[in-house]
Length: 427
Image (tube, rainbow, N blue to C red; front, side, top):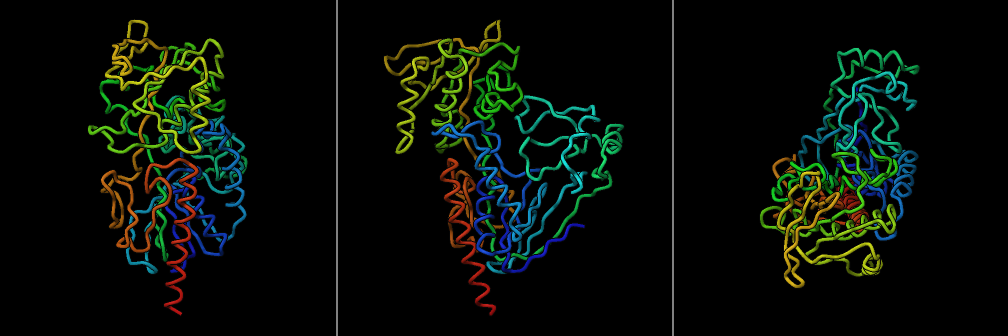
């Protein structure tokens, strides 16, 4: 049975991505007791699925490794993975949280040796790689996963694979009798850091994402480019494995659109500019990159990066919101639209089309376990009626990593003020 030692001075952080991890660490390093609840089997969130950051094109693994080391060595931080907050009652300074814990079927004896995965035959779509590859029924979500423990997919329970995994483990780490648990504990303040999810590209019917395999999303392309991703970093088409050298990026796919997301998702222009460099670096003079855009939002410190990408000979900018995508007999996506600089119609054929997909909140409006003020896009507003519940990072708005981390630090400070105030009243 999982036990959590907590009081009304404990801070609950919901979500273990870069924002939740930042908020939890900042609070814990001031001496506050923190419980971090993460729905996935590992920490790091969507940042862990990036190949590079913009604008410096550095690797997220560096910052994540530092955060993970801080988390491992801080005695004030309790981490619960595969966990979800299902209820929150009370008021600022006096909440009771209810958390549901799903079984991992692997206990803390796990050394991440991988013998269980070698013994298992069943394979499933790899969520970490957005379904672009397969993973075993016993798996480590990704190479830097924290906690560094394997997970058994519940779909192999009751099969020979489960027994093979158990028999292969030298450390008695496979526990097929683990059950779902529900626990309750007190807390004084809550930091809601559930982040964002990519808008469902299948809803943008004219672009054929659900019909044409060589139309993919920007988050999927990020995994393709990563050397640790499903193709070993090779830019190839999902349909036939052909090298993708002629690649189109379509901006505002689902954003700034009355039929989809009303807001600008802020990161999309920079993400696509970054991904243009992936193609140019991979293919050199053979690269042929087209970026279709309404306008490029690369202000302040990002403008220099935009200027650098604009200067790449293999990258051309087409000012247009494409009207539709069709597929020719060879599986090539053909982008149709009008270039608004000259108002010329085009029908451009590409090897691969990448949709710069918009950001929306990970938690639906009707799924919050507590009354909270949301804006029209579903992001959490900074409203006094929220009491001791504070948004962090992309739960508050569409933010890039840098701004999300800054916002999370502010959320930690506000939560600390609440529990300090409650402790003062009680004293």
